[in-house]
Image 1 (spheres, helix red, strand yellow):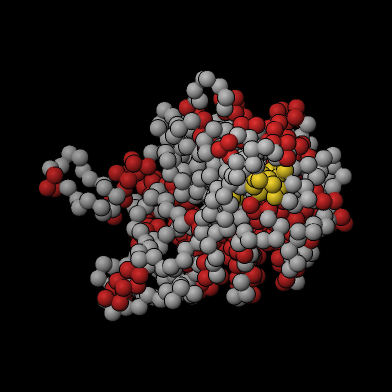
Image 2 (cartoon, one colour):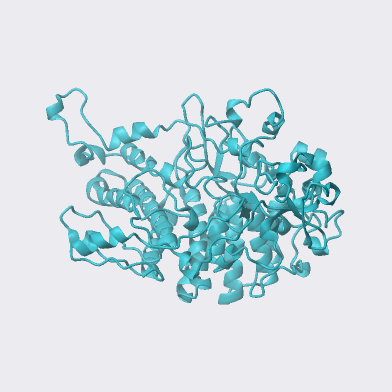
Length: 617
């Protein structure tokens, strides 16, 4: 689905929220900031125009201009996969003075991977629901009314899913609030499960009533179902692993499976695109795996900067660490400790590119790069040709530099849907008595992903497809968490390989109740390390005076060696990230965000109560 190419959001803001009659005197114009209900809600074109306003907030893609909220690489760079120079960025340690916004600009709290305390989009969705019921119902055919109501309820459910993922309990509003209705405006939080039950009903309605196809660039039932599979997997697994409500967990996970199967059984999408093309193509409109994408255009001044930060030269302050690197499966489908693949125990980037799952080569450069904090540089979001300019005198072209990038962004794709599906099915099987996952299930999901074609460059390097995952011979990973089955561990591994620097990792370890993985003070030390580097051969520029006492490696026996200016030949091993320090200690309260002191005081000043997030009281 081609998205955004011909949509100008400024035009929408002017057209909807500041509707005025240009041929009237200024004094006769309607009040600014108000939709003129009698004129606006009369037909589908107006409803479509209103609905498009939601797209930029929920279908962010690579964001736009210098925006980073919900964008890969720049927005989603806080997780256990990534390590920076010096002290690691940390979680909140105190309640903020203020937390909140009423802006329509996409806003993201990085350490919670979700929105600010902001109910702007809830109100917009409720306005649409209310006006459909009271202004449009008699003017539309039943099918049209049901479709647009489904669109409005989908976006309301989307926003509440995100708010709950960050704050837990939140006040639930089912309708627009009158300006003088302070009791409703200042209501306290509703319990998380109560809110998500309302979201569940919104999503069920959307899956039953939204059109399968509403034209190019428009949200439809398949798009909604794809996101519902994500959001219901998140909440169902959160309810389960955080031991909140097993009945709700089961209900939400079953809806995740139902939504995913709607997409999978349609036969409309397939894994017939190579991995690199999903992120670095100028036009994704015909990509068979992409369910929804955001399109960019220099001529329309709709551009981004994410590719620039994947071009081989721009700094990556949160580089991929050895823990992430080691998680990549070998091409024979085994973990590196048990693999028969050639050079499976070699952790140089050159060897990793050909011994590991093909997504490794499509994600990382196969040479060390000092622009990354760990020397492992992610080039997932730029074309291969961008790397030709690293040491060239020629300037980078606009598509790979500055804020003028135009490669399309996959908003949601089939790989996520099938991985949501297989995980939800496995939780239901292992914990709730549902049918066990079968080999056919794995073949439809994980193994279908592994069968993606390889692009020409990867083939020339010797990259191979990874062997299928089989129930009869699951990898025996010594790093597996003890409380996770071997099958679930491999499902989680597949997500980790697939979604590097995308939306998933922090949300995954939060919902699995595994946020302790963000504590980098661990015995194996992999969080402080990058790939294996032969400094005399690969990076001799670091073997000079100003790196004495700074450059460190860890050799194959686990010994740390510090460069002293005379031991050049000893500097071969896993790169130790410069001045590495663990992040500040944290407790389980950081699973959820606090609200601000000022927000609580605002309630108090008017005689109302806003409860603080549990653990932050």
